[in-house]
Length: 201
Image 1 (spheres, rainbow, N blue to C red):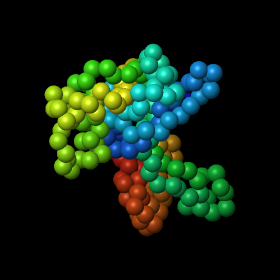
Image 2 (cartoon, helix red, strand yellow; image 1 turned 135 degrees about the horizontal axis):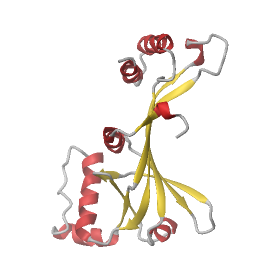
Image 3 (cartoon, one colour; image 1 turned 180 degrees about the vertical axis):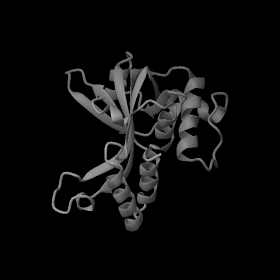
């Protein structure tokens, strides 16, 4: 990463991104060499990323042989207007965020028990209130669906974290941003202000 001051390798960042990011972006290279990005829901068990899809089509064909992929998880925070720190200059306008770019081989899961664990992890993430029978390969109601759905496993070999909350700005500017965020009070502004405050410790 070019901006090393924004880099973060704390495992807690990976876990936070995996838990809170609702739509991840899968980066593939198609058969003719064209890059393709696929937005999808996902869940992570430790640092293994799972998602589901059809057992046919381009994505399935590309992943069937264990293609190497990238996977982006991004958590957007507040937009920062330029005029908070420069009344006439547009350049200070920016957007704060956390992100994780994970890479590794991605394969089709064949084992029904692993499929069930992955799909149950998806249910726990996106429907945490439960109100369904846990997905279990030994449960007869799930046997046919498990056989008919595609589940894909990204075995993360490496990942790069990026955390942008003004750490490269002077303390005076960061304090101006904190005040502006608290005064504006949009839904993400308080959380963004707290993240900037952590950079002052």
